[in-house]
Image (cartoon, rainbow over all chains, first blue to last red; front, side, top):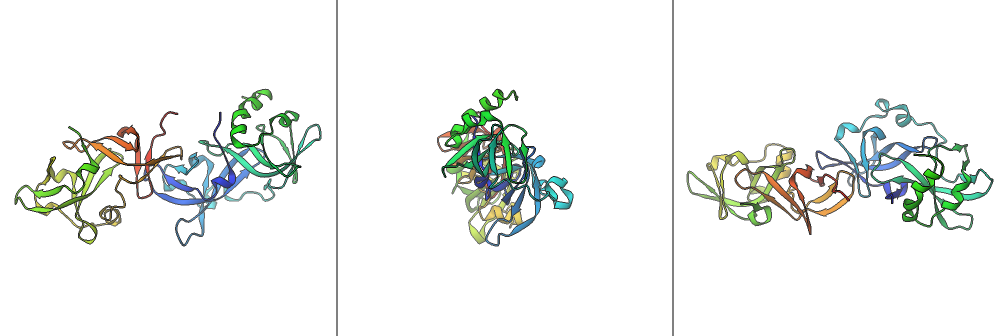
Length: 186
Length: 148
């Protein structure tokens, strides 16, 4: 059983220092690397009433854990200016937004369209699945292999994914390991 | 013998040299790295004064004795002003695990009044050893993730 959270639930979470117990920023958005199935980093907003975009970004390597209620970092030095961040985070290539992409199995069945990423709680940003809008207009959750073929508008997933479409995150949390072991991963 | 932050709140602070009552204990500020009491805040709001733990000569059940009234001082920097205003008080503070999950609120802290060392962080109906306290600030107290 893996605890999971959607990207939209991560947006707005406070970024908190472990040693200081202070909220130094809040999550504006996820910088997602679809080919690697991981979050490369986070963009940030300032905390408080005058909240606006914060220039600094948070590379995934400097994240201690993405939790349900906060993103934990060691201290404020984890926040860096884009120029000082890895290129993946400081200047991410455009066209990486997977939202709206069609999900096709290798056998050519459409499972729906991507609505959000699903992140492993407690990780630095491991994306283990997607929330999708199914063809029938409902919400589904699919597990992801570690790597997958992706173009601008379509991503291709193994046929087995069909059997693992879940109605909720709890369901996905229960089957993501089984899915991956079926594919011969870890 | 252990004491508790909630029990000590409001206790008289007395000068050992002049026997004068200097005020009441308003807040306790901890050093999360040393897991020890760092400062006491005496009196409230604009009249709040601080005293360092090493100037406390006896933390008793009925009164807190400090070396003398000159050991009390007004806040000197932003952190001390925060402390004086109670913004660093552990009791009532939100508790977060280092994995980013809510653990409720800190409801009390058990400590050794002789050494000032913290013993237990009380989180409502469960407790964590003070050794699991990783940080404490105005936003949250950070507790090493309990085994699930």
